Length: 521
Image 1 (tube, rainbow, N blue to C red):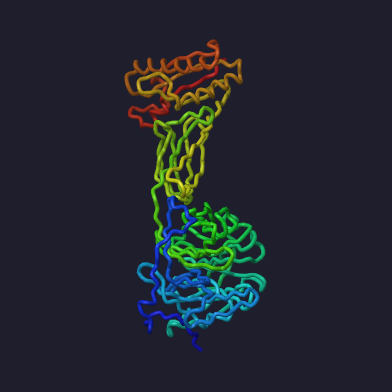
Image 2 (image 1 turned 60 degrees about the horizontal axis):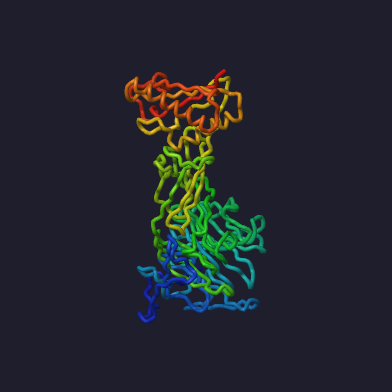
C-alpha cells in the first residue's frame, strides 16, 4: 500500500490569489543590542499565527515547520492534560527573498493524532528521520522512512529507531551534510542533566550505531536542543538554557575540530539573543537564515523570523610586555592561530611591542610568543561580538639565569641598542634586571660583562662599539645597586661570532649581537 505524502511539490495551488500572501515587514526586536558587530535584521515570514510556529528544515525547496495551529488539510487535536493543541508538521512555499507562504499539511501518513516533532532529511532527500509521540505527555520517539522514487510524494518503510526506553524522549534530530552523523537531543540517563545533545554514526542502510554524548563542551546541567551543523561541518549551533546566556534559551556555537571534538562554545551574542527563548536557528547562507523566538516566555508562542546578518569590521590589538617591569617588548616573534589550528598571522611586534590584525567575532585566537631570554607563552582570547576593538596584553616572564660550573650565567641577544648607539633600549632593561636579582640573591658572586657585535662595519669600529655597550650594561648594574668591585666589562667586537658567516641572515646577525655574563672564580 502506498503511503500518502500530502505536501504539494510541483502541483499548482488552486483558488489562492495574491491577496493570500502576507507582506513581510522588516523589524528590530527591542531587546537586541543594535551596536553588536554581528547585527541581525529580522523579517516576519508571513505565516505566524496566534499559536506557535517553529522552523524545522528544508525538503524539496519547501520550508518545513512544526505548528499547533490548524491549517489546510490538517486536524489539530487537543492535549487534554495541558489544554494545549498538539503540533503538526507543515510545508511552506519559499520565494526568492526567503519569505514563506501557503502552509500545507506535510504528510498524512507520517502524522498521528498527537504531537509531531522535528525532522531531518538525507542530502539526496530519499530518507527522513522524524519524531512524534503517541499520547498526551508521552516521550518523543525517533522514526525513519524512505521516499518512494517511483510514486513521488509517498513515504514507505516507516521504522522506529529505538534509542531510549519508553520513559525518555528523543527530539530535534539533525543529519549532517555527509549523512554519516545523526545528532539529536535526549533526556535519557547518563547525561549532564536535562536534555543533552548526542551523536550517532549512520550506516549506509540508515541504521545508527555508536551513540555518544557530545560532552560538557556542548551540554550543561539543563537543556540543549535544536541542532544545526553548517554544511562545511565546521560549526555546530544549538539552543541552551544552561550555558551562560541572556535568559531562557539562547543560541550558542561551538567549533568542530578534526578529531570530532568541540572547542570554543560561545553565546553568539546580544545581536541575536534576548531574555526570550531563541530556538531552531539555521543558516541558509553566510548572511541569511531562520530562527524561532518565543515572544511570551510564560507560554508556548513561537514565531518564525527570517534574518539577515550584517557584520562590521573588528580589530584585535595585542601588546607583549615584560611581566615584572611592564615594559613593552619589541621584536617578539608572534604566531596567531584560530581554534582549528590555521595560522592567521605570523609576525614580530613593532616598536611599541604591539600587533594589530583584523579579527572575526566569536573566533578563538591562540597567541603564541617566542622571544630570546623569555619563557615561551601561549594565550587564548575569544573575539567578543560586542566591541569593535579588542585589546589583549600578553605577559612574558624572563628566564632565570642558569649557573653551571662557573661558566656562562646567561647570554642575551635581546639586550638591544639603537643603530650606532651604546645606550640600552627600554625593552632590554627587564633582561638586565634578572641579572640584578641573581647578584642580589648571591652576594659573593662576581661577574664579567662581555659584549659582542655582528660583522657589519669595520673590525675597529665594532670593537669600540662592543666596549661601549658592555660599559652601558656595567653602568646599569651599578645604578641598580651592584658594587663596582663585583663587576668587570670588556668588548670582543666581531672576533667571537656564534655564526661565522660572511653574509649572515638577519637572525644570525641578531644572535651574533649579544652580551654574555660570566662568573668570576
